[in-house]
Image (cartoon, rainbow, N blue to C red):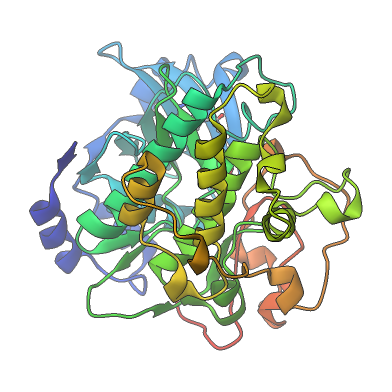
Length: 389
Ligand SMILES: Nc1ncnc2c1ncn2[C@@H]1O[C@H](COP(=O)(O)OP(=O)(O)OP(=O)(O)O)[C@@H](O)[C@H]1O
């Protein structure tokens, strides 16, 4: 693990703010490799559909072989989206200078003419959404050992962002489709387009709300008050998904089982939490450990942000280095309860998440009003009391 923190700090101070024109920012990109459009065109055989490996909210992703033979995932942003360009720049600003085993590796970018392209190290095993939660679309079997490994490594990546990098980074969109797996199933956190840098002297940032339904911490979704605890809440939801092998919302299930976090709390109160463990493991798991992991997920999703443990504490709990004190688990924050509504929409698969650009949201209405327009898509919209970034 390497962190170029001092370099990172210096760059931050000199970066322009979002009020500066996007074009000026693009021309100021210095901290990453610049690829020519021609090289990326050759690498992807003219962006051939045969090389297309994915589609996110902001563009298509192609597999390509760079001049030096490195395999890359090449993410082409749609040319006209200003929001896309903003996220493109954020991604570069946030991860170009940091390296960690559990973060995707940005190899560089291309900013020629209208082209905005991000180039990442290629990862063989797709995302957790498409594999573990992909409902039989993947042949990969996740045994308990692999799940445990993935949980710990994702937690390590987040602890690094939250506690080791200066200024701290809040990711804002931790979810199964943003956890990619390499050939050894080492998870890598991806998609830093919404990330926020968090100076030490601030208790929270007031910001537009962005993220994905089902993973949003209630205090952030409702008031737009962002702290690292919002990521920790999302991680808690992800942890439940990994242990249970199901999406956080599944409208095909009987009503009381549809919302994973609600279900977890209900089972916890009944002393039957272990029922949530993925039946496809056929009982082949460490019961004490799986139970502990589910309790850690409940600790991370508690309603009061300050009760949620830090990510470094979560890592220690997952590794069994510190006890999980049951006394301290309080009721989770449930957005549907706070808003006095239950989502009533047709079920969408976890693996069909699409990002939504804030310009598509109705900023004149309240945050809660827009919350449920795009299930499992990354989305941004203006919080009730704030119009800042
Ligand atoms: N580094 C990578 N290596 C291999 N495949 C990748 C890589 N990055 C992205 N992909 C593939 O491209 C798909 C789309 O990724 P992208 O980050 O653009 O969108 P997403 O996270 O799925 O959706 P959203 O934009 O709504 O968050 C991923 O699901 C994955 O299959």
